[in-house]
Length: 80
Image (cartoon, helix red, strand yellow):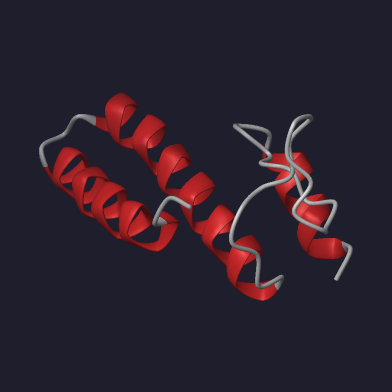
């Protein structure tokens, strides 16, 4: 499984650098990526999963990678 917590921290740091450099559009985009990584980190930690469910992989739970879909990621958290 990817390390979404580390990815979040790195993207957040990158986002702050872009923001401080007045690169606001890029900073907003990277901020969205940072949020996506944080949500995925929360999902896998809260549900204690080691891998996402896919069409070819059934690890014993029903949680699939929400991809870039913020609403789908939030829905995973609300199912808790």
